[in-house]
Image (cartoon, rainbow, N blue to C red; front, side):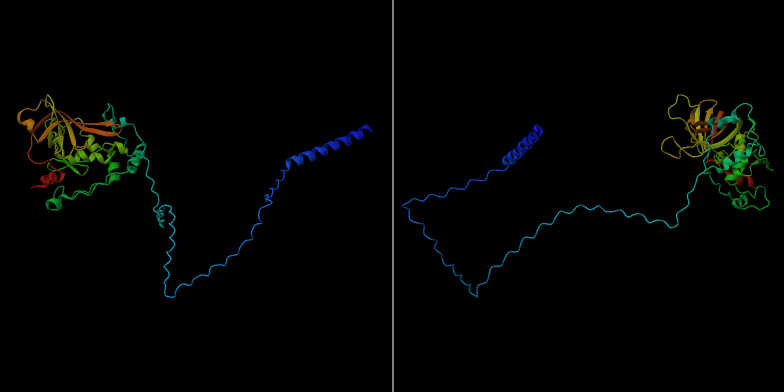
Length: 354
């Protein structure tokens, strides 16, 4: 029984609490404004008097109304900068096929001087196991210079077709030159005592001190057909290798060092060059570093052209596969030379002269 009355008391208390909370939450109503107190002896307010509305006066018919100013035009909104779109290039309907360049295997730079080591017997013959691989690598090398066919001596000199050396064979192409570089030089003795080397170059003498080889610059420069180390070509043909440690005689332009105590060194070149700004600077293929047997004196120091005779060294000097020098000449004698260096065509014309 006590429990029942306790529950009833709790419910009453909860209901009273809720009503109290709601009564506090409601804002109090605004008090009404008090009415104005009118004095007892004041007269009553007069009722409002209605005034008649004013009658508009019509404008005379002849009067013109002033023009109404136009509404000002709204200022245009600032436009966002437009970026010009670059049109896409038209697609080529016939695209060129991709060309894959052959990869030239890198070789040891020391291989360029193998021919100068004791016991070197030369490159393998064409039938040897490694000869085919070397020939294939040399043939596939890129940027191989093409050799233009040389004009026949008969056409240059106007001689009869049956004269010696009249029908000069055309220069071989790059593949044939690369294949021939691995074999021995082809020497063809001629009736006048000269030798035709590989069917292309005329050479005199036997390589001794008394009768040195007389070669042309075209003969020496033909080495670049198969020897360009920076392009992977490292074969010195036998027609140039056979001149190593032999006595050689050649003519060309002379350049002495500008500042030197003793003028016992010089350059023998195919083209004229003064060491600065006149002429064409030499390359390793068309210049010889000359070591004189005695310093130049007198008029020899002022030579512009000359003829040198000495022992030729085919000695490549490489710096990271870049060829710096190729030909050296020791124990050399220089003499005065008049006229430009002889070209191969001029040698042939002299050879065919009656």
